[in-house]
Length: 112
Image (cartoon, rainbow, N blue to C red; front, side, top):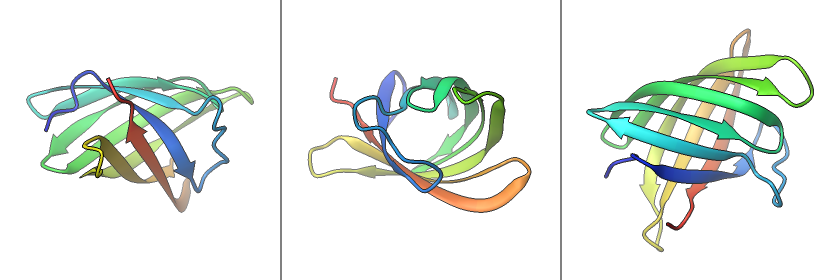
């Protein structure tokens, strides 16, 4: 399993409603356990992340510019799962810097 050049879309989040017509889309890259990428979508103008992957666990730090104004940053811990269709899912537990409220989001891989 490798995340290099894989794209995911957010399907649910406890931090905000997900627009099914333009969900946040994530583009992942990976090399030797280093993970990085970018994202944009319904509430985000542009975001970046960097972190590591060990087995099925992905740890990242992120920052993004919000469409509503301002920026947000934080950390997340994701678990990789393989769906019945063979595509990956990311189940992510995250929090924003300055706010200890735990959140959970689910992203599904886009078929290539």
